Image 1 (cartoon, rainbow, N blue to C red):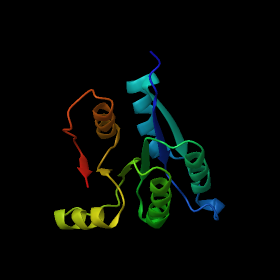
Image 2: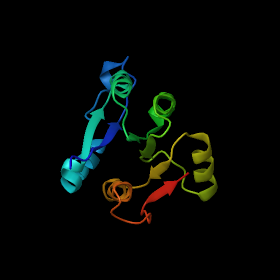
Image 3: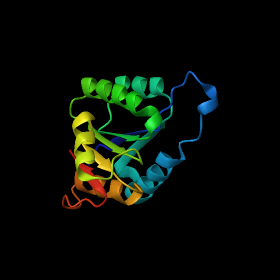
Image 4: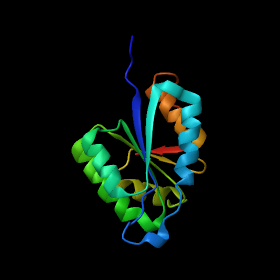
Length: 150
């Protein structure tokens, strides 16, 4: 039986009008490498730095999961890309991670209410994201560590 692979698009997006702010997306690269090692042929992943490339890819082939890094300098860019992703595929699971989230519960609640995401991974994302995929692929219960869901 030929089972369909779970498609994941990673984004560590930049405003591409300024060439000097480009850096390798090492953060999502580490998460991607861990997932590929753990899940192998069960998943198909792509990494994007430029929003236009990500949007074009989503228009061609919708991902099952959109995973975005979250830093202060691209909060609005992420929001815009998520809105497009949801318009193209309302069922896409949007996972965000990174240091740009409040620490106190009320701040976290406000963040989740004001951002169109399904889950937020705090601290290092490799193991937490693997837990999310294990759940999606039916390999474990929904007891996610280091994860906040909206």
